[in-house]
Amino acid sequence: MISLAALTALCPPPAVVPPAPDWPRVEDTLGMGLPQDYKELITTYGPGRFCGFITLYQPHAPSEWADLTGPMPARLRGQIEEVRQAARHPWQLPHSPEDLFAVGVTGNGDYLFWVTRPVGTPDEWTVAVNEALRAPWFTYNGSLTEFLVSVLSGTTSVPMFPKDLLDLAPAFTPSPLESGSPAAVARTPASTRVIRDWASAKGYDLPERGRIPIEIIEAWKQENPN
Figure 1 (cartoon, rainbow, N blue to C red):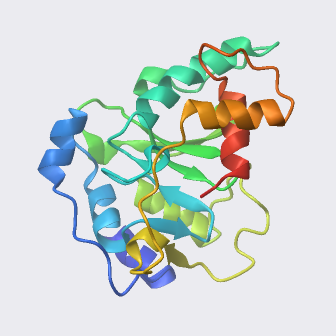
Figure 2 (figure 1 turned 180 degrees about the vertical axis):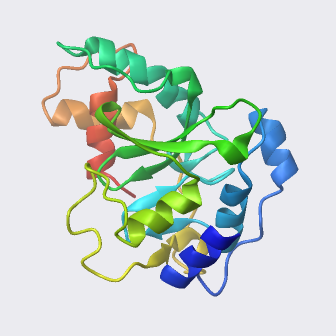
């Protein structure tokens, strides 16, 4: 695809990447087809970060925080309206939560979503970005690969992204887990007990039982990115 060629020219992929996922199995797990450009992106780049900032979710990733086939996409979809309604002045949503499927996250806790319309035609899906499940929202009328090309080339400016994102040349940094580092180990999802203990130490008013508010989860993730 032209957009992938443009992205690899702008931001070269690693020389060595993990084997491509079993895409039919991935799509069967999700119960839906995936955009062809996403499958080519993951096959070409593997896990890692664009500009040290944008991380795409991977199928069957070792950490639930980055697992496309894990609980995070559905969990985030369910929390969008919850966070909005909890606000003193709820904001208008540009897309129905049912139409959003999380596909990535940034170093600042912004989420990247596919807008899964039209249903059943994933190659026509567009991209939405929001700030930690709150307003503001930004919608890009194109594929995920086209979004990356546009952002990393400086053509598109996403309001919630850092102003200095492109101060250095665009680059892709493979995750240590897949880079062959002997010290790399598979990361396991943090337990709720770990997050509760951290929140208590930080002075958050968190009940011993029940769902941990997304604000606290996001704060924990910011302080514990690895």
